[in-house]
Amino acid sequence: MDGGVIMKRISSIKSIMKTKIIMSLTNKYPEIDTLMKIINIMVRKYHEECISAGIATDLDGDGLMDEMEEDDRWVPYLLTLGLIYKVQKNDSKAWYNHETSFLQNDDLQEKFLTTFGYFWHLLVEISKCIRTQSSEDVLEQLRTTMTCIPQEDIIYAHSTDQQHLGDHCPDFALTLQRDQKLVVLTICGTRMIPAPEMKDVFMDLYADTEPFLHGHAHRGMAIGCRNIVEKVLPFILSTLEENPGYEIMVTGYSLGAGISQLVTMEFSEGESRKVIPSGTIIRCFCYGTPPVFYSDEVQDYKCPNVYSVTFNNDGLISASLTNVLKLFMQIKALERMHMRRRDMCRLVFSKSDFNINPLESFRKSGGNEQEEEGDEDIQTNADEDDDEDEMGDTENELKSELWMQVREALDKVSHGGDLIHLEHPSKLFIFKRKNDIITRIFHDTNPFTCSLRLRASMFKDHMPWGYNTLFEGYGLSSDDVDLNCVK
Picture 1 (cartoon, rainbow, N blue to C red):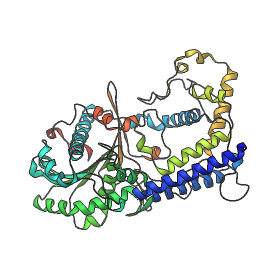
Picture 2: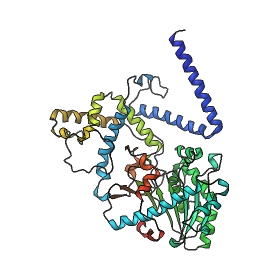
Picture 3: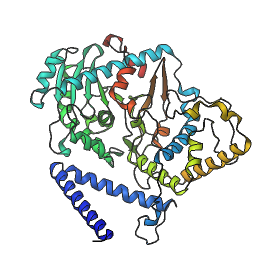
Picture 4: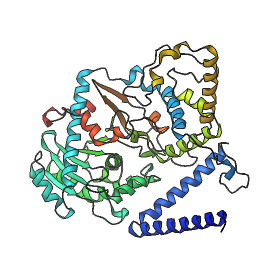
């Protein structure tokens, strides 16, 4: 038996095993079928957009990249991502570190941290209590275990229990905050402890869009929003009736953060607004928030009283289906350059700032631009080598030319065609805590959603312990909460 026949049989066996594995998973998790359809659509869109952008060819006209586009040589993905990172970092200097982005008022920063911190600690405590109980007794057990809230002020609690995504919503609880006159809806993030809750995971991954109010929203989170509103709205209405003048506060983390924004929009502008008492103030504090909504009617739409809190380089702030597609297209565009690995290393590990304006030669920035705070993404010996300051003009010109080629390749890539590009319907606060706390505030959040922002700590900073570190020592008592600071 020759080698060709053996390889064909191995390929056939792999195909059969793959099919059986997918069928087995689909039987257990029917949502996988829909998820695979989304993935197939994205793969097709990736091919179409690469061809349309001129970074791939389609000689046979089937809408897919030609096989000859596949490069058999080793592809240094980390170096490719490093190039994209360097361009992103250079582009962000003009806005991320602009003096108007920084909060200069220490007293106001203290109020922000205390107020956001209190509702973060409440969210963490509710999540912990719900996830140690069974769904049958979650309300009673929550009343028993929550020591920071009187039992009678825990109105409703829900633990993940549905078998079908269409009926599913993540864990949440409804409580009263009497000293602040608030009805607080707390929506938890993706359940991972004691074991991953796959319905939560699928809700995250259903990242295409569907119509929502006056635009489109992340499909999985829109499903979660509808299901939560259906369950909790009657309890909110009865509580507001018993406590006239109370406000509504919606909080959430990660998956819950995206859903909390949509719930707030529904309460403020949807059918729910018709039954909520007139004049009721509705607020939302969300932590680790993904782009979740695009308005078809209002450019740069922002829902009033919605505030997104981000720790340092939390990557979810820019994570959307269109941005993931754009990143893969950028990788393809750079691969098509067939740049030598030595040149890629030269650019990635260069300490010098670069100017990629084709009308100007490579030059040092003169130290006028600040480095992004807390951004230790690429740390190498080369970064610590000051000998680059003495590089000759020839080396500088070569790097300038290479950077211009990289920029030209990346400029061919835009967002995924007719896919809806999700944005943040909120004002954005970014906190970095190392030695001191640095606060940035952004009313315009578009720079955060135009690309998937690559940072070494983008995953670590999204984890709950990052936010725990940020709010350590802040918001430990409701007495210090000042909602007026974020009006």
